[in-house]
Image (cartoon, rainbow, N blue to C red; front, side, top):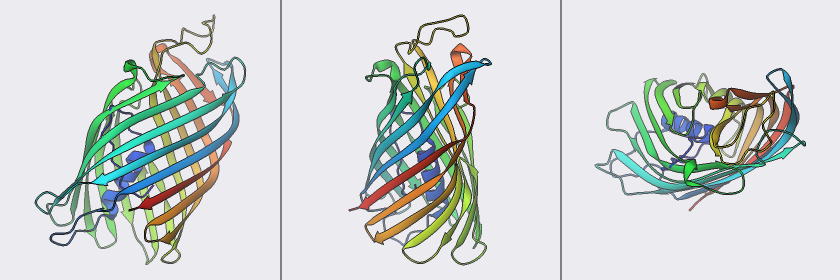
Length: 309
């Protein structure tokens, strides 16, 4: 997503959210005196589907599943501070439905809900600073519980080195995670080799784009999709090959690769459609030492609608 959607959540910092912040920092222009960055209220609604794939865990078959997901993000800008700092508040909901084969050791749903506070700062020429922190509730299963509460933090600094090259470095922290997602470094490199062309390298998004005209943009992107969720009830009983999976956390980890097209139908509305492959799809119960890995490459399709008011 290219909109600036900055969570203030007892929350899991999603990959889409981190990528949106990185993109915003690298493309944020120095605002004119008295102007407001991203002054429009924005609402984004997205959905995606990943095809069925089989999984193994500890060398044994662990069933399989397909994924249907959807979400909504609302951003409301606040009055700027000193003409250089631009705060915003927002709401964010994400939902995953897992269509599981019988016996697959996973809950049937993953979901998160949060509110957000963030700030973009441009106090010095060629520098952009972004920070966001707050609470989100993220649970696996039928309902939200207080054990799904966590704290997220994101910080990023970017610099425009030349007219066609920018880079940024930062960190994202998720208190709910117990594995690799707890503290993640963030790096972004952005290069515009020719008018209309852009290449970007980093985590969680790498790729290239071509601005065909004012309304149409084409991309080829590799991007991560990840999050941490609290599991209250075990989805399947404990066995000789599988530990107890209740009262723990799981981490959802996916890599999507493929082309996308964004159409800006008007100054206030745009839509983005992507298709491609998911070569990596894992679910990790890190504290229990139990990780499900996909056996093959799945296919995905996604769509996003964004309005500005």
